[in-house]
Image (cartoon, rainbow, N blue to C red; front, side):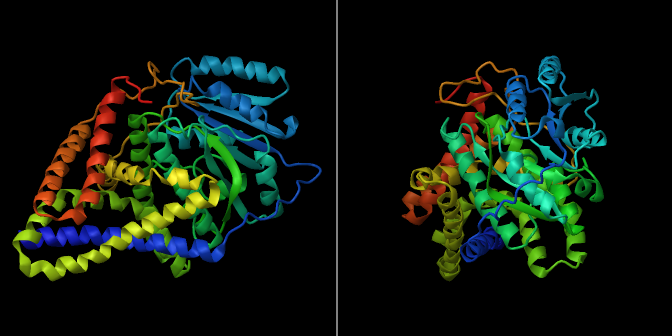
Length: 487
């Protein structure tokens, strides 16, 4: 039993360590490449036709602001086709009908494409819309995004001037960053993905991904790569790998920003994280074998593997939390294992690499990065707190358990005075995993008491983050499900 506990514990820590080393690699590339966005070349006098696709499903609170934002894009009306890809089952469709009629009267080429079967979910809607898309290029914006007026003027010249370029991806900005601690934590995570991961992968010529929105595709790239597939929950990541393995290149523009609404309540966030986590593992199963059989460089294969499998860290985080207490007792009762525990100190490098990863990302794009990084311990605790939710997603993907595409609810939350109280799209179902999160918080608290009793104070900071993570995640899941709002 002792050997089994130590082996599993060491394996979990080793996986976290490996991904920590990958974090060091990303920081190294970042400091070496010092990436800058390429110069924007002007559009030709006769600009190309663009199709703007807006996939929607029951978006009563944000549909109108999305359409208004798209209609403010600085692009000739006669060269821009707008597709409302609507799978709604509520009054959203009626609202869109009125919006489309008004915008057509203003001279916009806007069309409502309503489906009733919702087959393929978002991927199916995008694929259906592509059949009637007249543009050479396809811009996609989810319902919670508000593209800046110059978005197309910034993105399209790169595609027009480079026929081998299949996608231009912009960086997500945040409409409601300061709404709550929950939204500030999400902003740190997303900033790191874009400013560090996307930027480094693109500049180092590794595979990057379309983020499902705030990007412009070359239509022929989508078609050449097999169009949209619905066999994973991350149709954007799936198409990205298929396209790049066919030789298409992508461009990430750090200065091309598109603000979006962050989930303001935790059950919607957990649903989003579940979909992203499970979809990434499904995509890894689908594409890693062909990636390693391909003629891509070893660097592309290694970074692609790390990219697609990074969510494996969540089961490992959960194992470390669970085994922390028995390992504590082993450390005190088995002095013969002292050398082993001393060697395990090397795993602290994982924490250092993670800190640098997020620190460099914030410094890259935020003038007030010092203030934003003050909540970093809560960000780490929040990541740990999502381990139960995301571990379930990992195992469902590994064991081929299919699930529906659950879109993240949007509430039109823009400032501290706004509330999602009473919103019809609120996630009110409390899953059994919430009980496990609260029990784990209690379990970790017992471990903290034991650490103090055994004077193993070096464990306290990590146990504290587990306690805050599991406790706050479980508590907020219950509180938000019962319509209570935190400031």
